[in-house]
Length: 427
Image (tube, rainbow, N blue to C red; front, side, top):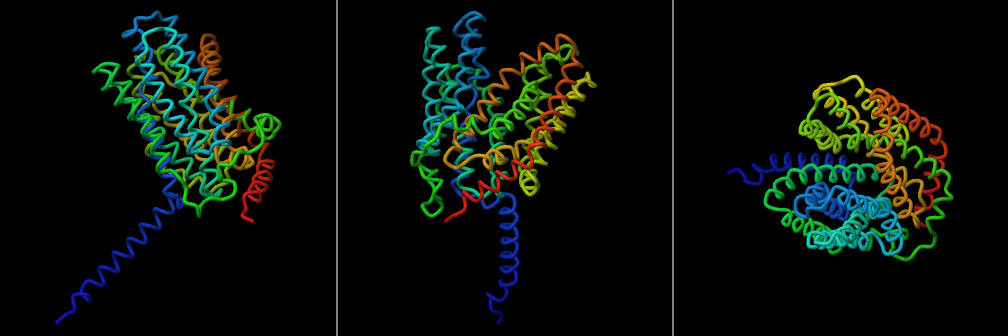
């Protein structure tokens, strides 16, 4: 009689081999990221899924609160100003109280202020809570970036940053659809759901995001660190890097400011603009998880330069199109550049920053991005009034300038990265 175990052994061995192979593939794509990262990833996704109020805030103010367009502008400006300094505050806090407390404070605070914003019925209170929402909403970004920089080796950081960026875009894409459904039942429900999602995300990080004691390195502790933003401002290499990043940001942010105006000049409706921009989300959702692990094995500066150039080509090609399909094609091109840049740029910042000041380095990086987002429509609309082709030509020139700047910084970035690795080495 045949032993049942002998009959099952070949299948079991085949299954085990397949499982080991699948595990190897999984580890290749995730870079052996620990459970702590996936908690932060899940909280970021949850927080972004709930980010529905701000895009609909102008509708809420005009329809439910019956305020003038001037007041709407003031409220949105207050929220935007809060967003500019939000990452500076988050960067300071993460160096003082740790990433868990900062993420919980930022996400939970956002949820609480959103609830108060939805309950307020006086213009002054609405503007105040809109500012506080903006102030709290971005605090989690330098915190999550600092966590990745502190807990993962340089080779694994691009994968982690890329997957986190993917979570942000995945959550944003679904939040727009979900928010549109909720708003049909009234704005109150929109505020409640957004508030609950943010609070839940913060609590998830606090209760589930604590690192194992064995995984903590000296630089990971929550002890207070010396130093200030003045130390970051004295870092000429970091400032040069941010100058290049600012030029890139001005170009990238044309997508939400002058691109819809350019499409309108070509007779394309606002609803069609939404479908065109959906190309951006689709490409990121499909490409980012695969591209980030591959790009992480390449020289980060070279990937960054290539991504900036591809983004410039995509925006430059906008001058050659006038149909929805043509615009969607250009969006797909510059999104590929966005994927490349987002896969490595924060890893470069991690390599430039001393462990004790990482939060502040990422905070200043975030403020630079917010400032670029503010400057982009001012420059873009001025150029668009002159000539659309002039706008897209300037975008190409800015990207070429940013890429050239990155090329000149390569030797110094490599030298600083080597010094940072030595500082992080145990013992």
